[in-house]
Length: 317
Image (tube, rainbow, N blue to C red; front, side, top):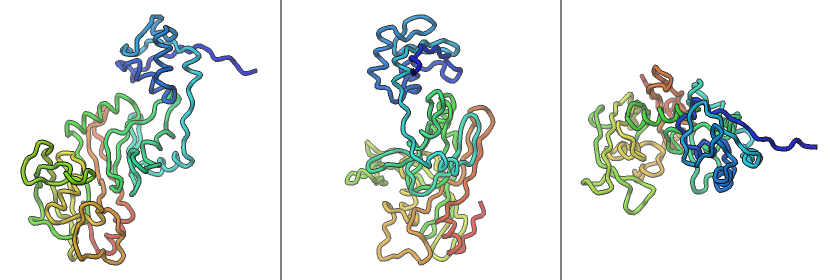
């Protein structure tokens, strides 16, 4: 005979202090319908320190939450695709108690979208802990961009890291192989950027400020040149969608393999080079949530390394 479901008394951890009850429940029971969770709260079956609560109640660290059997019993583990845990482990560049830094490969989306069945956010289900908490994304990379991707392991780390990205305390360095040489070889690109009025999946540089346009600034430096190609180091000051790709195309040095912004007519990719986006998130430096500085560099992706070898490019960074 199976054991009957029992009432659970769960202590609110330090990391969950200040969290609303509804969000706390959703984290612990991601597959239980919100209506079912609301019902046990509304009917008084769930108690906080012995008292009735509401869904918008703010929890405090150390409080005891009484979870009725119906809530605990309705949780169903989300399916985890075979191999996801191993694939994530293979990407790990750095791990501590607060965060993990991954080296994202080419072609793997960070989040889901139309026609996408596999992405980093979904794969992180494999790292959901015993309390039902899944690691959180705190920034994004385009699907075909490779390199450094930071993932928070706790709610407090996610909040701190998100503030670092929003407040521009995160310093990101990218490498890009481009067709053509920027003039001057080192400088700043500062433009307005907006979504293209005829193609919502593309961004563009409008000739003047529009209602939708936002300022975008990128610092760049030429690390090496070979024939008609350049290896650039790019540092985005702002964080607009497709910013680096648009800015490189704007100064007539489009990034190799860019399906949206490489529009050079009557030009074919030289033999030995793969027709993939040559944009790599090389390094990230930002305040660590636990104090100090996080500084991680990602090895260059295989297809860009192949291009270095074919063209004889030798980065100094």
